[in-house]
Every structure is written in structure tokens, then in C-alpha cells.
Length: 162
Image 1 (cartoon, one colour):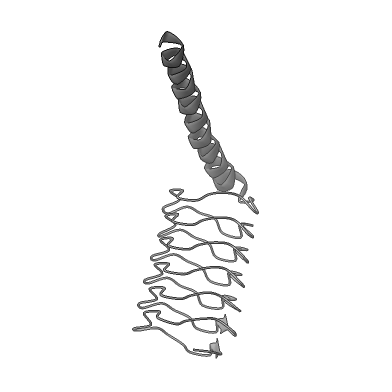
Image 2 (cartoon, rainbow, N blue to C red):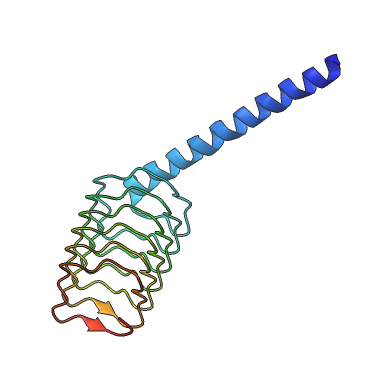
């Protein structure tokens, strides 16, 4: 009986340490991104990057699923093949950003500025694009099934499969 209790206590301590390291590791990656603006293929899932200045950042193939990037500056950022599923990009500046082949399924983009952005072959299924500026954006091959497109500015956008 005592042996089982000791094993359970040790297992609990090790699990607690592993969880603490995982949280600390994510905090280190967030600090790294904010400092260097370079973190391709990073796991930033669920990160809090509200209002962050990530202009020109390289986040290609990064996992930003459920991250909060609302009011962030991602102008000119490289986000191709990134996973932004269910992320919060409300009022985010994404002008001239490269989001080609990114996953934006169920992403909140209300009021975001995507003018001149590359959204080729992008998955925008069920995304919330209310009042989004897509002026001169490239949406060739983008999947917009079920997306909320009310008040979107499509001026000079390249559209296909809408």
C-alpha cells in the first residue's frame, strides 16, 4: 500500500514539473517572437499576443491555433502555411502579409486590415470577416464556404471559388 502511494506521489510531482516546463517553454517562445520576430514552425498555440508589434515577422508554418492576436501589427508578416484556426485576429493589421495556404478556419477577423495580403489557397471556412478590408488582396483558390462576409471591401481583390 505504501509503495503505491509513493509511486502516485512521485508520478504527480513529475507530471506537475512537466506541465510547468511546458508552460514556461511557451512563455519563452512568446518572448522570443516578441523580441526577434522570428519563429517559423513554432508552437504558439493559445498564446496571448494581444496588440503585439510583429511587423515583418517570420511565422511560416507556425501553430497559432486559438492564439489571441487581436489588435496586433502583422503588416508584411510571413504566415504562409500557418495554422490560425480559431485564432482571434480582430482589428489586426495584416496589410501585405503572406497568408498563402494558411488555415484560418473559424478565425475571427472582424475589422482586420488584409489589404494587399496574399490569401491564395487559404482555408477561410466559417471565418468571421465582418467589415474586413480585402482591397487588392489575392484570394485565388481560397475556400470561403460558410464565412461571414458582411461589409467586406473587395475592391481590386483577385477572387476565385467564392
